[in-house]
Image (cartoon, rainbow, N blue to C red; front, side, top):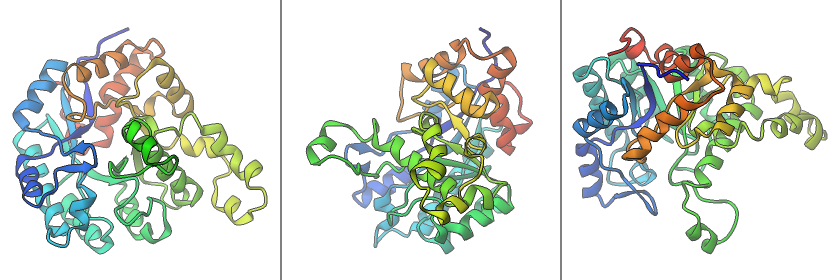
Amino acid sequence: MSDPADWVDIHHHSYFPEIVDLLDRHGIREMAPGVPVPSWTRERALDVMDGAGISASVASVLLPDAALRSPVLDARGLARRTNEQLAALVRDHPGRFGGLASLPLPDLDGALQEIEYGLDVLGLDGVVLSASLADGTFLGDPHLDPLLHELNRRRATVFLHPNPACGSHGGGAAGAAAIPPGVLDFVFDTTRAAVNLLYGGALARFADLRVVLAHAGGTVPYLSLRIDLAKRWIHTDRPQFAARTPQDTRAALGRFYYETAQSASPEVLSLLKEVAGADRILFGTDYPFIKGDAVDSSLGLVDAFAGFTGAERRAVASGTARELIPSLRAAGTR
């Protein structure tokens, strides 16, 4: 085991006080029932990063569905204000933060405009997308092709994160109350979107997208064989389905990047390395949803994994993230 001096957290949520206050004034205090909008300040974030030995973090903001659907809040304006805050964070702390633009989806025209502004004018490093949208659709649905086409044209980095407002599709209200959504529903949301991108042919059509799946891809690595068998076992009577699905599904799953937040057990890391390779694994924490000692533990679990060579551990810790995030590409270690 070695301890790289350079760690980049690809999964860091910067809920700026100004944005949180705006949401609060409109009665939006939760991402979803039981999931509060978190408290975040740059000073506290930097203290946590320094304490854990994290050189840089890639900041993103998931805007609550309630804000994106609000008849009072302007979703385009909210995304714009968020992205300007992200750009200021990156500018004020060069080398310590990257930033991923928020988009006002499901407003497709507004999202396309914000990609241009966020990436070209503000210089942000890519975008964060919810696995499922406020209108109930998932990434990979054909009507979102213009969005993926534009991101593909730019060879953009896309951080695919579960929607905290997603609901369980199995069990009743009692079961939903007993099991917090972060335990099961989040990972299923990511899984559904990733497999939708695969089965719908979007991964093949938009081959230059660089998609990072949150939380080790949900259940994608564990289900990789079942996902592959679907085209020649479960759905042999659906030729249109088979035609859209890559011939080598396992290779296609290896095109995703997978980050380690809340998922860095030795068993999961071994599976990720088998499915995608160490060069497709990135370190992540999910701060500030994950707080305190859990940030240190997240780093310690990845660093302690015996299945990485020294070069692989350096790639997971920061090397691959710096390749994906332009503002951190030349920053190097502190």
